[in-house]
Image 1 (cartoon, one colour):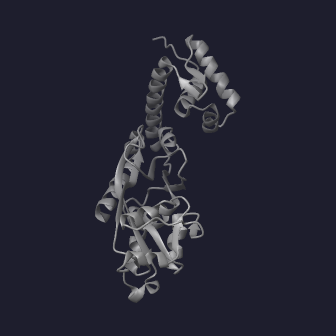
Image 2 (tube, rainbow, N blue to C red):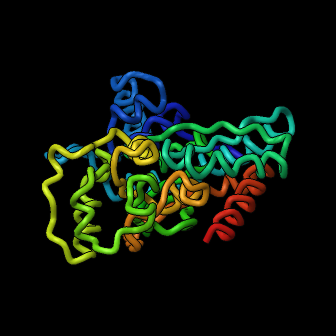
Length: 302
């Protein structure tokens, strides 16, 4: 059989560009220069005799045929990657790469990983810190990651599998010694008398919470802001004030007595914590073990 195949480097350059709709991001992914990506895309267009991408005032867009071709390429490259990964597993074990945000890693995932190590002691695990804007979805599709644990909303990740593990519930917490008799406040308005702690990434949570209590919003400028939720929670443990926290993040601290609920209201936000993965991950023995373990851990927690 005679194959009608385009140059592989040109295919990889176009496929990466089509996912990012950015030559620069595609170049970063492929570890080449933007100029090299542009040349490879032009080479593929010349090979096919038609344009695949168009530049507009809003940036790159795919032509109709380009979108169709990109979809096929992504699917086929994913299958090739999956088949290659399965063969490599028989030769040498590679780590299971897990992306997670720092607060979730420190306060929920790591305290429970001991159980997974007991279930699968031979599995090598690599946990990578991914910030809010990092390209989790594309890195899973290209095989740089096996699985990700992310905070977000339904439908946010459309190209990969995304299963909700835990609901987002906001609760006000403080060091027990900071509250009268170490018990929750009876009057929610008393919260205004405390230093309110919060993360720079979630500046609206306090006013959302106060609104649910029927209280007017506060100007939080000058309040205690922290670079991460993890730091805000630790400040609450140290007695600096009252922090607004994700219940799943501070449940262990509440159970141990390091923190207590400052007012008896859990506010459900509608968001949640999701397990994100591709078919490639479920094709690995280690991936299936991790999936079964973490979904069971989440079920037990709920």
